[in-house]
Length: 164
Ligand code: FES
Image (tube, rainbow, N blue to C red; front, top):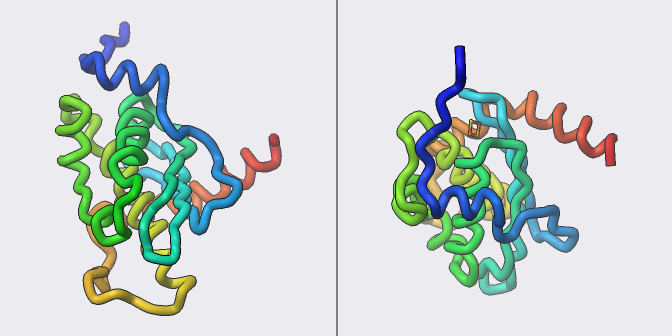
């Protein structure tokens, strides 16, 4: 059976070929690893956060597909100089809109990007030891989508670290 190429638009292809903010951030304030239960792909999101809870830098490492790289790339741009609350409120639908659309079977790739970002934000507050009023107590849908493969994701991360 031959593979039919997915109908990605030019913007997605351009971001896939030349992603922005790709790579590990050595001086990150917080990072989070997230695995996608649908495809087993994973992503790490890094944030540099200042004392006013504003994101000064964001970067990512992706072991996912073109759609995941494109959505993660645009997300890191969208949250730069935003407060954590503003970044939290960026929806995966908004990201898909920003990149000019995705085939519906690729929506979960954008959900993974948002899930990883939210996990990083939640982890930041856990490490600080307080919870702002706007942060939902229960995990959101996006975080759950990024959590189910957590164990697998961590194992893969360790294996990849071992190769460096
Ligand atoms: S198919 Fe796994 S992230 Fe896109």
